[in-house]
Each structure stands twice: as structure tokens, then as C-alpha cells.
Image (cartoon, rainbow, N blue to C red; front, side):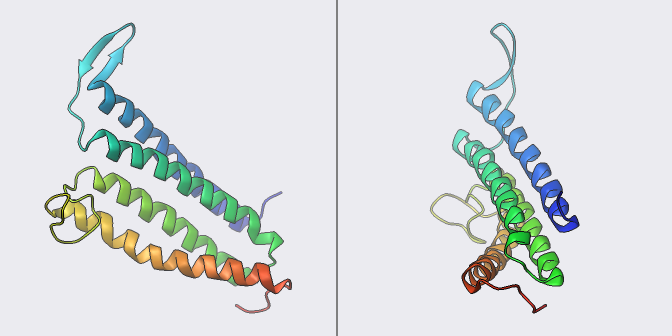
Length: 162
């Protein structure tokens, strides 16, 4: 039986997984240049981004969902205080969605949404900002989450702090 905190994480992880699987369909369509009607008839569809961006959206989303599930499974065993477990859960959820937004925005950002300005990959645009800002914020949030998990794992005792 899973706790309410775990169910929250797992529900959002399942949705992040769903979006990642949709990116897999986008990847297939990008590689084919459209949608195949079996057998062998392809309806041409112009996909945004390139094949590699679709591959990143697909695999990155899958890995984010797995990260969320794995850390969600650890929460009870590491004996986090209830309030802290809830905060960490929402940080995990935010990270999963921020990274999902990043990967999808990068499909529309010539600069791969890795900077707010033009870079060697291309020009900045609205998608650069939409993709980078949440991902950047939650990169630092996730560093905190990882630190909390490591600290709790090494302490070997229940967390009595909020």
C-alpha cells in the first residue's frame, strides 16, 4: 500500500511518462517525415524540431518519470518527517514537469532552450524562455532534493525535522 504522498508522485510520474511516450510517437513521425498508414503509405507531416530533439524529449521524459518513481518509492523507507516528505514530493513533481516543458519547448527553440540568448545552436525565442526558466529553477530544487535524500540515507535515523 502506498502513502498519499507516494500516490501523488506516482500519478504525476505516470502523466510525465504519458507525455514522454507521446514524444516517442513524435520521434517516429519525425524520422518518417509523417504518419504511416500501414502498409507503407506515409501522410507527410512537417514536425517541429529535429530527430535528435524528439529523441531527447522521449528519452528525457522516460528518465524523469523513472526518477520520480524511484525516489517516491524511497520516501517511506528513509523515514522522512511527514511535512518534509510532502514538500519533497512536490519538488519531485515540479522537477518532472519543468523538465518535460523544457524538452518540448526545445523542439521550438533554435537555441535548444539552453540559454536565454542566442548561442552556437541558434537564436533565442519565446520557447527558449518557456523551456529554460522552469528547468533552471528546478535544477537547483533537484540538487536540494538529492541532498536531502543522501543526508537522510546516511543518517540512518528517522527525520524528526519539518
